[in-house]
Image (cartoon, rainbow, N blue to C red; front, side, top):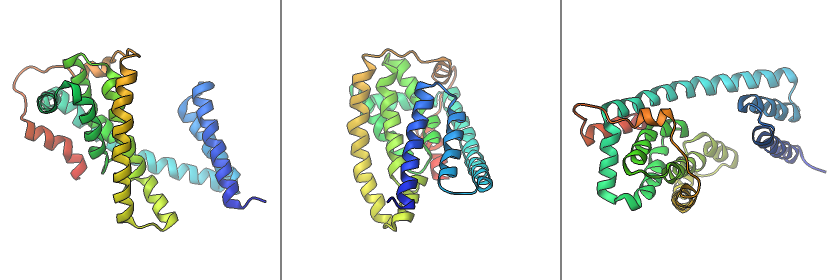
Length: 242
């Protein structure tokens, strides 16, 4: 006979599988699908229906209240990088230091480091202008740099505290914070480098992807004087420092 904890894990696994099927196979809107499976998990856990609705309301409100602010501010910084030419400056410096042949490895490394203190979404809007600029300047496949970017940010967000998932695991398992950070970096960084750049190289050359209008806007070459590398780097790191 299964324990309540085992039953909850089973219902959660079924909900995750259902979420993937609803989005990928049934083409249901992602927000609607996430809402349905969240309410399903809450009801399956034995919570009263009223409590399920209140928990969902509070969870969505807290998440959107934080995410909306950080994505808004991150988008402003990203737009500043594009309009001022800062993304172009960083792209030139990366190419000058490491060369075009190794730039996808550098993108994965930078994404992992930037993703340590900020959410995935914030790191994405901060680094996307640089990736788009590199793609435009060197005529590189978008996925060659896009997949390493996502791999680095994903590894940081999923494995390294103080991100919510690792913190929740530490709390439930009563693990040591310092040891978890050390092991997470020791495992997450190699994982990002092993998966991201090779996958980007393999997929990017076989699946042509054309950057959209947002990419063109964020990688446009501005007229006039461009900022220096130091002040551009400060703008990128400012949300991380804060």
